[in-house]
Image (cartoon, rainbow, N blue to C red; front, side):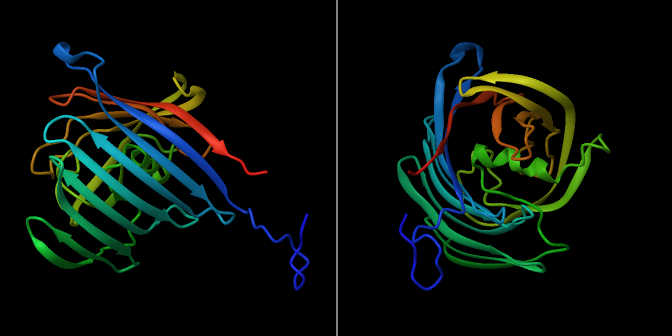
Length: 252
């Protein structure tokens, strides 16, 4: 193995791990039962210090179609650092933006087809624990901040969303709500990507959005990584999401 002359360390640095995953979106409406209505492809880099960056491409086929690309980073304590997004709706440009999160405020620079150029500075009541960029792969990460030992419905306080639309099809612009989380219990889950020890969580729903979001059930891995395994949304949405492929990318 080649080494760098000054340090004596290997020339190639591989302190991080890389994972790739695919999530399928299925309809559970009676007239569209198990019809594929979208998909999501992601690459996750977990650095040696525990910080992580996920790059997610999302496609929703239901009209108006949605294509969203997001690059989202968290620190070693799973607190949001920054997010870059680009959004297409109905096969036309909707918006692009960059968000940065600080202890006392969050800032956003964005350009959208509707609002034009927008600069936002949002004052925070406390450091932001999580951010909703509407990637399903990131929905499970909210539960890192749930205390399983306490149980019950728990609030993670104020969070920011990139869009109040249930499909994330507007903006991207900041929208603030308070988020509550619930826990059902441990489970053993088999999805197309494999069989996993899992936690079963719930989003009870939110009335703070322009349209109330129906309850949302999520299963995550129980290994501390909170990897999304499967989930379903009730009410008018009647949709289901499942991890169909997950692999670690290893280099020789």
